[in-house]
Amino acid sequence: MKFEQFQFEGREVRFESLRHAAESAGFIHAGQWDYERVTFDLKIVHQEDIYYLRVPAYAIKGDIPHDDCVVRMLTPILGKHYYPHGVEYDGEDFPEPIVNRCTKKLEQIKANLDSE
Image 1 (cartoon, rainbow, N blue to C red):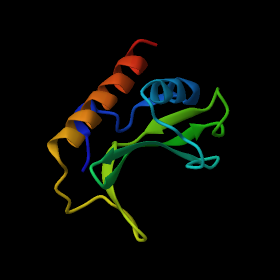
Image 2: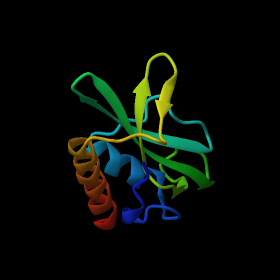
Image 3: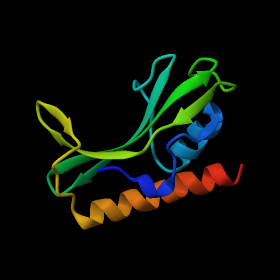
Image 4: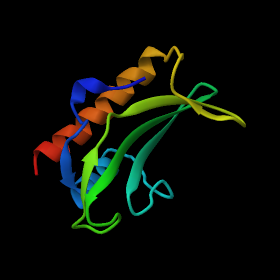
C-alpha cells in the first residue's frame, strides 16, 4: 500500500533532516542503506502479524550517511511480513488500525520536515 497523499515523492532534503524526522517518529535505518539508497523502517506488530512501513530515498548529492548528503524521497509503502518469504506490498488488505497508525507516523515525519 502506497501513501501518496503526503507528496514525499520527489521531495529533496538533507539526509540529516530526513534521519532526524524519521527517527523522531520511531523509524530506524539500521542496515537498510548503502551509499546511494536508504530506507527508514517502522515495524508494527498487530495481533500475530508483522507490518513494515517504509520511507525510501536515494542520494542525489553526496553519499549516505553523511549529514550534508541530499536525498530525494520516494513514496512511503506499507507491507506485511510473511515468514520466511519476506515482505509483500501488493494485494494485501491492511487492517484499519495499521493504516491509521501509519498515517499518523507519516504526518509526524512531514511536520518535522516542514518545520526545518
